[in-house]
Image 1 (tube, rainbow, N blue to C red):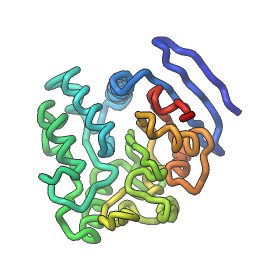
Image 2 (cartoon, rainbow, N blue to C red):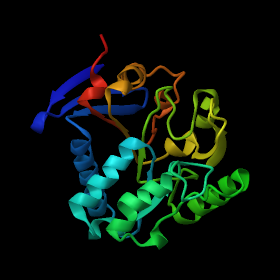
Image 3 (cartoon, helix red, strand yellow):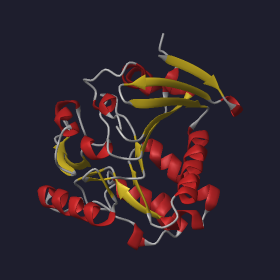
Length: 259
């Protein structure tokens, strides 16, 4: 079942059923429009959740960098962000000053400029032994994040998608992580052989809301195979929060089919 809805400011919504998960695809003009909508999601969380810290997990990559810059330019040192505990979906096993470190860019572009209290920032320590760090980060999540059905439940997880359909650091050869009993695990990039630490698909699918943020014409092909066709060989197609909501925030360029 597929339904197209027109809403204000030229944003399109596509609603369809994937098993027990309702996935909504929203098409925006550009990353700034997407970033503005994510800010609205954060504001809504502060209105809905009053008595505890709000737990969100963010991703790395070029698109989140632009989103973090938008947050800072829009709000600066905003009180909005002080209600959140910030976690990472995944991290490369590198030091925090390495240009490939997801934490580095979030810290430089958003966390630092926004004056977010570092006690609310939970980075994956990529320079640690990967196996030990995956266990340590799992324990930290269990200690801080509320539980639902025996697992930590994040209030919001922001995901991206790679050209190969990977999301977080769950690559096509690690679909098993969507049935893992672990909270975090160690994975390896299939071509670079770089070790990474990632939330498992089990935890991602236990979250209250998941939003994929995808931009650029180079993502058009994989979007058609995941957001629209949901081909299970791709990790992103296996993101189906059974007890939560699933959204795809996509810019117009990522919907244009190459000739």
